[in-house]
Length: 322
Image 1 (spheres, rainbow, N blue to C red):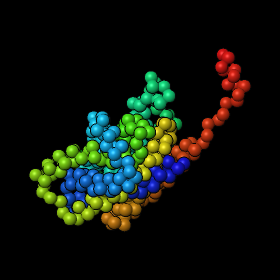
Image 2 (tube, rainbow, N blue to C red; image 1 turned 90 degrees about the vertical axis):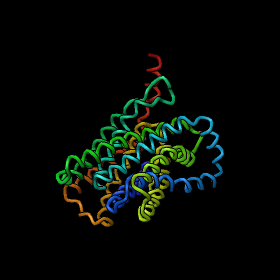
Image 3 (cartoon, one colour; image 1 turned 135 degrees about the horizontal axis):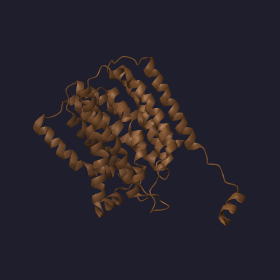
Image 4 (tube, rainbow, N blue to C red; image 1 turned 60 degrees about the vertical axis):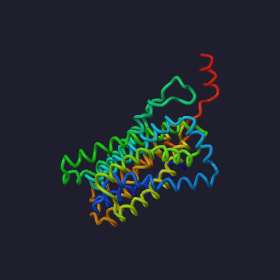
């Protein structure tokens, strides 16, 4: 339950990403700077945290000893996650991007067979069917929220804002889980997030140089809003979410529940668009979708905290003899 609460709280700060990215696009800001500036601003905050905890030297030794996994999975988990999201914001409203992003709930569950069990390294983990079914309920709620909006958006806009987000939906949980498995218990959440941020910097430098050559420098408004995104979403939300997944990393069902808690962010995005970007309030169908999402989250919470039934000792002995 603690992990789900942390995941839900992280979704509040993640919602800042979708609202401010759309705000920057409406003001004429380019997606290249929206993406790269976020990670540039993350570095000093994370560095101060890790230095204050006196854990930087251990992180540096880990990255120096084996840099390849850091570069690969940081590129997948951060670059292939956030660059497509900011690109999509140039073609679709925040509600569409945030709604499509909820597919990460299903993506996280579908990625389960790509990881091995801690107890039996020769066996792949199986897709948690129960978690997949509950996550599908949440997706129904997301569809209801988006249903009336889809009629007012062209197919070109849908594809340019939909396909990049689907890539991000698989990249984010894949990069996060691979780095969790690689770091194991050697590094804490703060070290892992800082390490992934540092390892992704070469890619962001390349992208920013391209942006400088093609669109010029960003405006001060975009720099400030990117700073807010970097602080709220890049540091606070990422820390909360990674810490939540760390707590349940050995349970596919609980991990799916934590990743599903991000679906709550669609509610925060709608509220942010209404009050900050003057978007209309959701209609009755969308409100029904919000209720369905909440029901799905309640089911995830219930099954994640329910303890499995204990098998009587007599039956255990009988099975052992058999």
